[in-house]
Image 1 (tube, rainbow, N blue to C red):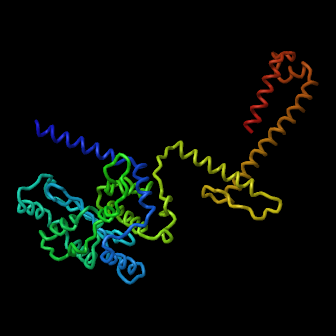
Image 2 (image 1 turned 90 degrees about the vertical axis):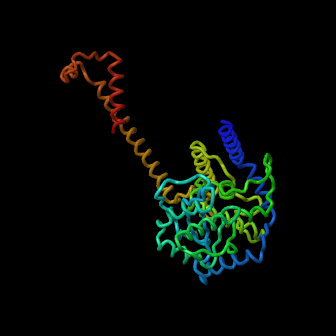
Image 3 (image 1 turned 30 degrees about the vertical axis):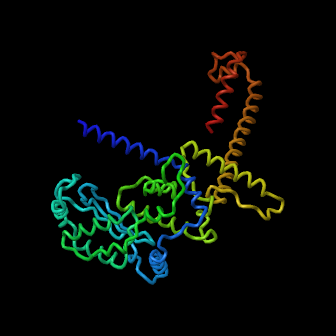
Length: 375
């Protein structure tokens, strides 16, 4: 019972710590302060190899698969591999995305010795095809850039997994591995209020650096983590550049902010955009129609918007003219009705109607009005 209570207490503390990581405004402020200075590459001579490879790949001198990003999903207790993905660093194309098939149930229990652990690895090693192993070999022989995690565990886990199936020397050495998190760790990002340190985890870094991206919240899937890692690494490379070389979105004070949007906020934003567009139209309208400014458009073609506006106006004008014609025809009918006698009403089969009753006239008016609307 004491052991169970201890596990519950640890779980509660863990959940509380994760909730604390969600104070994104504080994290944004801390990151923006740190982004106001130029970041530095740790071990520049070593990281320059990665930068040179990126440049050569973009210039078409090297294959995109010569520099890749690797991520694995595995059990921390048993080191049982759940899946792994490899994408190229420059263009983000998926090279490998393989979830191994387990003949037995997944194991989350720590093993007493390495031999037992190896037995679990070998139990499902046969489900890794030789074709997949060949793709790993061809896509990661020169350099593999392991960008996720504090260390090189992804590379070690995958290497051990392949070794149990007889695939040796497929992956490069650990020296060719560059973890992502230490790159940010060495920048000493300012401590946000209420934090002991800036939480350097991919699920925290990515939404702060790339807010409102469709990959936000899609963590702990090998392929999604690889794609997030690539974008986080792009941000790191931008922040290491001088201010004059950075793109506009990475200039000091220009970092994107996380905003909580609702359906009401969306329509308010649309309304403000329409008002700005109409106000711009009025300001730019002059006698010569020269030098007309662009509308603050909502990405609709101006000619389409004009056609809609004119067609709507013409529709209302047609309706107005129809009602005007109905009113004139009714007035003519009313003048003719004044000349009718009781005999005329009797001839029309209206013998029960009293011509002096005002209600008859009101009902007739209502009938004419409704017909006009129907037409």
